[in-house]
Length: 194
Image (cartoon, rainbow, N blue to C red; front, side):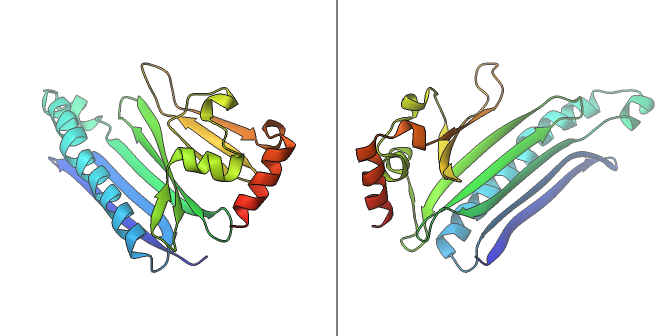
């Protein structure tokens, strides 16, 4: 698969001191306008958030420092969004994006977003359809997890949960074979041949 990059970068400064740096790049299949538009908007939203929201927070913290020595030791926030398309089969691909925010004080967080696309139709599938198509109609709860998203990978499924109420980012990889009955395995083969 030949890819192209959707990308944007921003640096917010105050008095020659970098307060926020944002770097966003997502590799998508070359020539797909729907994906370019979707991920281009995602990137612009993330970079705008870094400039406006995180930038305002960092600027207030920086300007509150009265001592020149403290200002010289001020550390910027760094926001990175990276993503890439991964082929699932000859008709579908998954685009998995990871966003990491590292603040100057050492705190930070990580979030993930994933979409399973049918590039020929310029659509992406909801989680229920992903599980029906590749995993015999199982639900996320059948795998013993409550997830924010999932995507097929290497004959299994990756479920992920973004930070929530003090719990950190988590990811669970499940091999699908042990969860399917024989009739579900046959149904899975039929669905993949559609």
